[in-house]
Image (cartoon, rainbow, N blue to C red; front, top):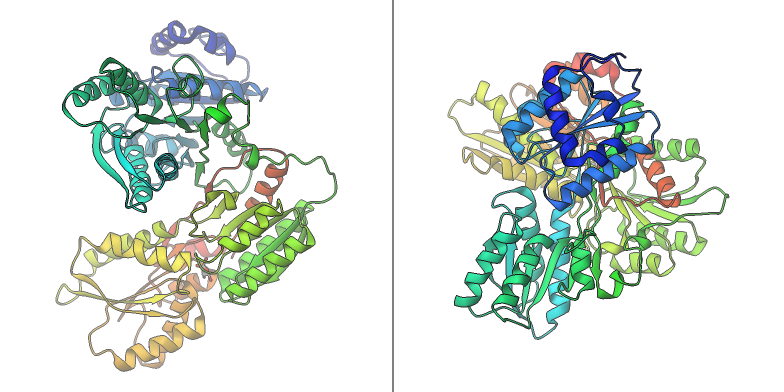
Length: 632
Ligand code: AHR
């Protein structure tokens, strides 16, 4: 492909050269910056639109991207710096597009302002969004830190520092209202609430900036009794607070930061100097972005929608001992024997589950992974027994889809003690110790519930009920399972601001067709109020309920609006027949991604904490077009 340089681009290029000449040489950009010159063929040209090149964390992200791109012979990166101006970043993206990049990596200054231009870019090329998300789903892949987890980890460390006695905590937040600020704070609070002796007595905002933290804290130290611990949402602000404490001659405060960067007064340096008690690494995702950029441009299958990266605690003990903070998550394997995987499945309750089982078995066979598969037949005790048998057999790795969220600590401790890593597939667990599992691959169930509700809101807007009231019946999946809990919550959260939408009955049908049919029968027999909508946590239960409605002489899809989750082929057939109105996708095709993660793990790669699959919403109008392309 031949590329021509526009005159306006020279200005950006010159700016970049002044800021980071060495970096640019590194990525081979200089040969590209020449007016009207036809360049030799460039294989993969990546545009990186960076929010700013002044924050150390972003400089580190940019460096990571350029370093990693160098490992691919055929890849070039061109970088723009928006100097923290959203308007400028919008222009940057437009210029990069005009330049003919093959893929855009963007780390946005502001989610809202950047969304339209990212949507525009995504119409023509793949887009990877880094760190701060944009609104909606018009991008190829999001990669970012797990900020709630970071917050929870800081909270856990506070309780380690303060022990039983407890104490007082201040929190220094980044920019008010920004997603990392909210998520880190939520995580911190969740953990602190679990310890009655620990009290979060003050929260201040310092916009991620060292100087601002220093000024605010200097004032506070003069006017307010000092706390035992200060948790700062980044290391730069923690350093500002440390300087303020020094000026005010305040001692005995322990400081905790986030980022864990190298360099003078970076988090690691501050831990080495004993100024910070701990920093929590906030991975930039630069390396992962380049690797995925390559896979996307190579059109490799199984690209997820979202990837959340792991954090690690760095203290004086680990920072100086040259200990790899991710060591427990890296397992390079020299053994050339096939990997032995033990998989404990939930059962065979639905079409979704049958497809999921097939996907895992096929993918293991294709990847040359030796699979021992045990069907838990809908019982947690069977799954626990299966995991114990895998431990006994000394398999290399265990994966399982937990039927319910709680009750796994003991058996996962046993797997950990035996040195066998565990991957969560499809469903998550609710346990405090995140070190008991290596990674999670699956859907965002909360979002699925939200999507069902969003679709319903817009449908009812165009098809209002006679009295404006919308009476909803909900068919829930297995009690205590992640999809049942989260789909319910996501659905309710989205409908909360609309009191005319009321869930008048919510019954359990365990994801089964038969139970959907029978439970709906009972509802029809006992419910005297008008039912406008059925929300079923999966297609099988909706299809069962449809059978009951037809037997009762009702017209499903017309007399009652029906929305469900999974997007199996039978749901599309029901939509074409006019009996179902919408299905929200939840992909069961997790096998290839699971095997890739297992191979990565044994290649010694660092695994993210959560890998979220890419999914869509299918209203009845698109069913006929989409059905022939469906793989399950
Ligand atoms: O965990 C995924 C859910 O489990 C599917 O939505 C449902 O059909 C299945 O049984």
